[in-house]
Length: 162
Image (cartoon, rainbow, N blue to C red):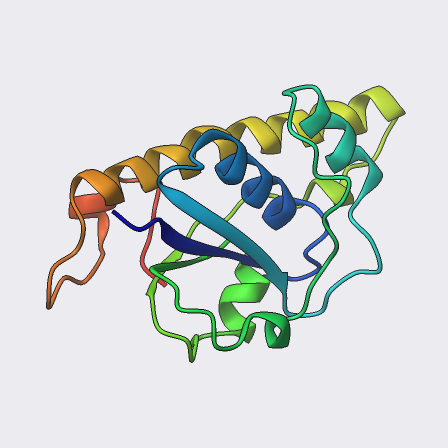
């Protein structure tokens, strides 16, 4: 069976979507191929995102922020927006694929000491790890059929349809 493809979309493509892409490609390589992009890509992947992913043995250091244009034409099964801004700025994905919105706080906005900021990155990383991998597992077990609306009957209470 061919691997399914998922796009993680957020504003800067420097933290949440990069972590999600890395987690999926590291933990579900036989089932999913993950991509990420931003509606307004940052200049680089956030250093703390790279650091907390390395704690799990996932290297996102080589990844770079990408614009939506870099993925036009890629056939996708799912497009998952990870922040409200991206969901509002990109209400339709022209490349097809079911849309799901899963909002996570932006760890780059964390303030305080370095340890407090790292704790926020870990918290967001762990939430993405749990919720995204669960969603993708449910999708594989119960793929949507024609006319499926993708609402929480299939994906669980933590997901709302965009």
